[in-house]
Image 1 (cartoon, one colour):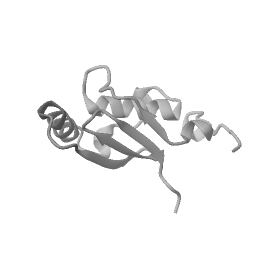
Image 2 (cartoon, rainbow, N blue to C red):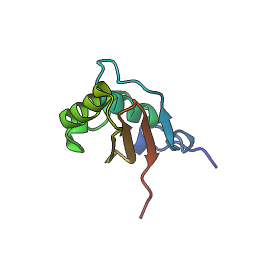
Image 3 (cartoon, rainbow, N blue to C red):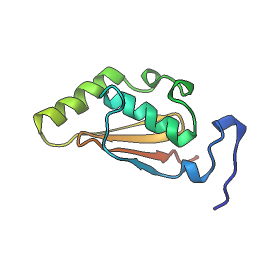
Length: 105
């Protein structure tokens, strides 16, 4: 795989865009939505303030409530998958976040 930088993607290389699995963490403020924004920004080589608002792609408050509630209750796991920026993001109630590039049509 060749590695290249593209000025339209914040300088992320092809290697940086590969599938990423983020260790369990809920971001600086303990919210799954914050962890998603931070993980996608990391994958793009950008700062979190330089990616589009998560709220434009998914209801961030609902994501936090659903995933955090399932974690706190110890209930059966929940997986929420959605597209954000150019990635498919899956958030598990066990704290995992998976990020993989959206396949081009």
